[in-house]
Image 1 (cartoon, rainbow, N blue to C red):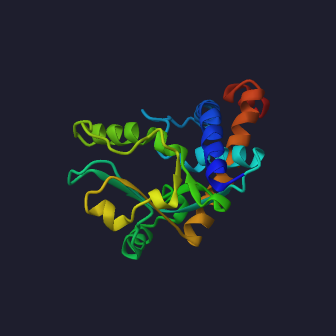
Image 2 (cartoon, rainbow, N blue to C red):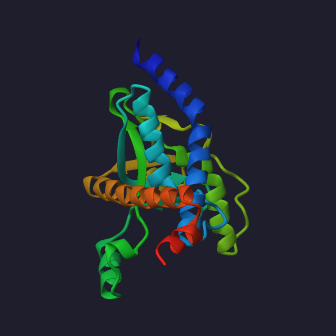
Length: 222
């Protein structure tokens, strides 16, 4: 099978499994919210890259793809206006020093990068969070008193991106529509570490759910 045919097969499989992954993500996050008393927020897919793309990676491995869970910085140009972009992972040393001076540790802060899936043999990136990018951005606009975006030029149904389809961060900053991903060892390490912590939390939430909910568990320890 040629690479072109394999990429077509990959796209078909992603289309087949994406709804099930979204449903599992929502169900699990609801249980985590109940177990730990943490509200999910208006958009449960805000900040979803760690677990959503973890599920994607595991699903693609089961289908026989050489999927790798990676992290780094990402920029998304969604329209040609001056505010038509967002990015993750570009945190300066000065910003980190400021957080440390304020007494924050890395675990006090939200994950500041982005996580996605690479399939090296096909030279492609797969990112399920693109499905929710427009709603996440519009919810962020609402929180900041801004109107919803009237133009969104990223195709949020296109979740498998070949390297030739990606653009640079500079191109995003020049008001071009498209996606930029820059993998780094440090953010990949942090994404995997955060995912492991999240999976432990999810495991505890699942245990609480099976035992009848938070109140039932509290009674057992009284």
